[in-house]
Image (cartoon, rainbow over all chains, first blue to last red; front, side, top):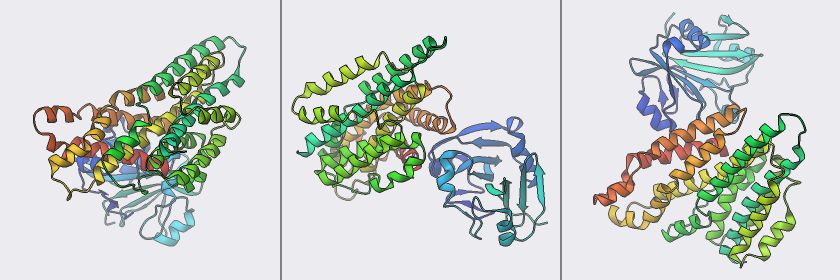
Length: 153
Length: 299
């Protein structure tokens, strides 16, 4: 998985049809107003503007749970280890820099240096904006990763 | 035992395991006021299971259709039996993969790979422990199946007897769910084997129209699965208290079904465009969808 770019052919800038060919499924379109506030929170924090989200709850070979679209192109990708059926996949997935799912917060610091933690409810996030990577930490484990366009501070 | 008989046995064993699981629900008898309602719901689901088993083409046919294409045996198409331990972490995953392995036994035996098929049979029986059916597997019945292989009516008689006996006991949605997932696994693996053979059939040996002639029975078999797919979806939808995994399975199969509704190779053939079928976008999408579901399940 390459922060700022994507995972396999699910890439920032790809359109919905291209992703459907890669994943096999179209998923469910969710209007911006109906998007889970948790997701809107992280998108805002990462300064990612989006028009709609495509949600996946399918048996796919990549642990993609949400795709954010702006002008019909992917602007953010969420990979999630929460669904039971993605746990085994996620065990084999990590960033090219060496951060893996279920790593602890100190591993995040070791790989990407110190970054500010953002709290939202019981979950905390680390944004590495210059790499285009967001990390959700829950119970001291990396459980979700977000890929977006790298941004300069 | 020749390969055909062996395959027939494997198909019978799958059916026997499904029905044995249903019978095992007898242990869940309840006396409270909800029992009647629960019984009715379970009965409806049991009817769905029976319908799905009836509508899905006899599994024994599929490997022989494949064989008729002349395609070489491809060991990479089937799921490695050595992976079975990774499926024992979840009863549902075990159930789905039990169905997948049962279909693989059919593929192996249709090519005379008897020893490999025995290995798969062994892991199938081990997975019955994970799904909680180890006590329900009636080994005496399996032995009777083997002895009656030469009599085509014997399976129907034995299964009818099993269904009749289960009528008084079927109550547990959880056990019904396991049976539904096993049927789903069998179904997906049959689709997977068929689509992979179509997809990987050498393209440089024959022109498109000739290739289509060879693969026509397999394409036709694929088309015929549409109603079976609907049955499998309804079966899974009827389960109460669905978990994420079941919802993901249903969502995936629904999209597969939507794709199926636009797959019309017979129309193309009737219009004299049969040679376009194998390059059909819908068929390609169907292949990817089946591959995606199957990859997730066997990972």
